[in-house]
Length: 205
Image (cartoon, rainbow, N blue to C red; front, side, top):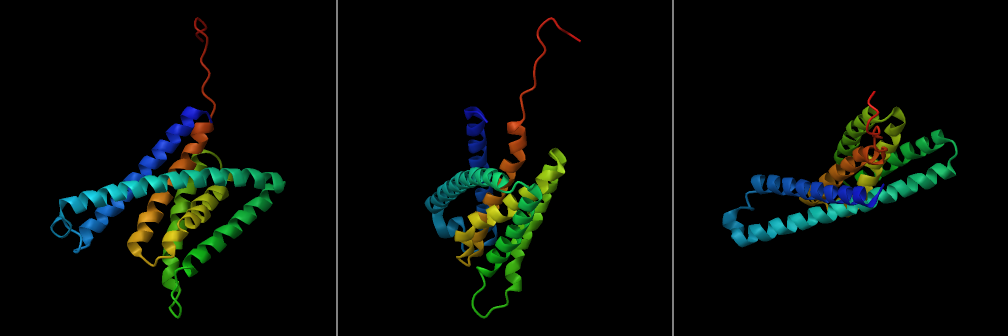
């Protein structure tokens, strides 16, 4: 990956983070009766908009850092686990553990924990869709690594929001992170693909 491709991936990831954060903000604005132009004023709306854009950009940058951290860990793990099947089992194990941790992290003492498995389940289902797309564009060996990245890494990145017991804060962090991660994992093989060679002039087939 050269510098130009890295900058392009970074900027596009930040852009997706901003777009996703704005989308969540618009939904909240439309369904929350306490949030309106009348109650907040034009200045309040503009400040909220600027804040949302800033949060989205930071989440995009955070996702980008997590993506390269994942690539580094994956590279080291492949060196440690000479048998790739073992590394696949390890990744599946962490998917289950992190999903369960993300659910139990939000359960207030004494409450039923089943409703709190909804979010991790949705993330796993979304990760499955992204992983199937990755397999269709590459090969079946990419399924487990993609599931691991989209599930375990996304939920770990979202831990600060999961600890707040706030639906808006959770959506504002999880959705942009998930979309940014999906964009990067689906772009990776295209970025790393070798450039097509051009036939020398005058050598038409």
